[in-house]
Image (tube, rainbow, N blue to C red; front, side, top):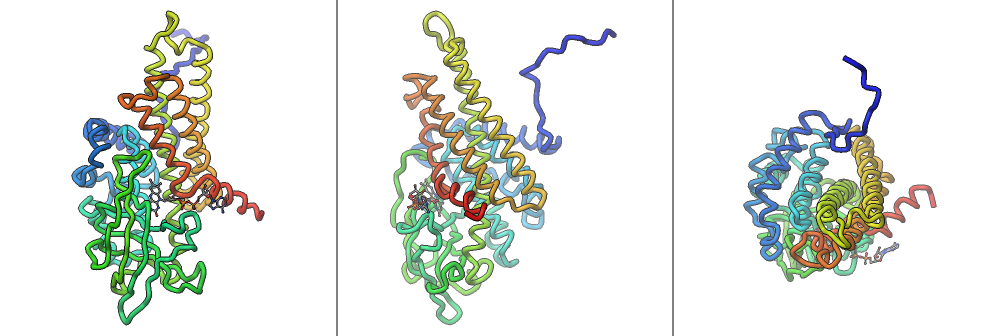
Length: 394
Ligand SMILES: Cc1cc2nc3c(=O)[nH]c(=O)nc-3n(C[C@H](O)[C@H](O)[C@H](O)COP(=O)(O)OP(=O)(O)OC[C@H]3O[C@@H](n4cnc5c(N)ncnc54)[C@H](O)[C@@H]3O)c2cc1C
């Protein structure tokens, strides 16, 4: 056989990343199919109703909520890349709100319970969280303190073998429907960063109240609550981790939150890019597909380059994390970078779709609103910049 002397690029060739094994790719294939078949068809309906509990239970039944948790608690015992793939697959749901509700469960609420929980707490919250039987929410933000976590006012005062909790939380994803809350409260108001403690509380505890369901710009498929705690008594064994170490525990949790946000931003940008590319191939103006105009073609080239850079950065950070490092500076950078790229891509995609980009019947309109949260949630751009800057001793 003659040796080929002309090697042509094959842009359509399936690309496998060096990070992923065949097993990872098998999961991607099955989970993506599930998201496309069972979540995507409901994307419009859930904007009105929010995603239903059965969707979470179904994810649990298929093993998608416990991919990285040990088998003894019902998990699959996989490495961190499974979590990354799950976040990427969820981008096919066409609903940022659904993705966020699920990510709160898998990447924000359950990991601290796995890391810090007692055996009893793991049996009570982690195992049913993995099956989807119990839904959790994460309560950090308060009406008077968001970025400044140490500025929270909710107090947990020890009274015998109980704590009495008073205060409030706001912007809490899954807060309306949750069965339990992982929350931060001050156990010693004079001890600064060392006076904050994590608690795991059932939402049917007397004194717990959903004071308001909040209305938002986007992420409509997700419920967002304001919560009130009035003389809410919890046993001392509701403490998660060490008393007084909650600030440090939650700072660790936030790294996982930022990584899943980064993966979601990149995958979301890819989906918007694909849909917009399809549109630009079909929509004609002045007798030709709009994608054939250099101005539009270059927009795609810019977006593709940024998405690819963001994706590779994200993968390298994930690789470091999966290999036991704790690369906080880079996690912060990738969260900042990917959420900005997500917003830029959304804006360009709306522009390319023209008037249709502004219409609700095209998914880009929703994605544009949903993705804006990424520069605020899990730490704002300004806070990310500050964390990065301070990591250099500035
Ligand atoms: C839809 C949605 C869902 C959410 N889900 C949850 C959840 O499930 N659980 C939860 O606990 N929280 C949740 N949040 C809260 C989110 O994490 C906070 O909104 C975010 O951390 C910012 O806090 P803040 O809104 O109080 O803004 P603030 O902290 O008041 O910040 C306001 C502005 O000031 C800037 N700023 C603040 N401090 C500094 C500084 N030191 N230097 C420079 N600029 C600064 C900020 O960057 C921002 O631009 C959610 C928010 C939204 C909108």
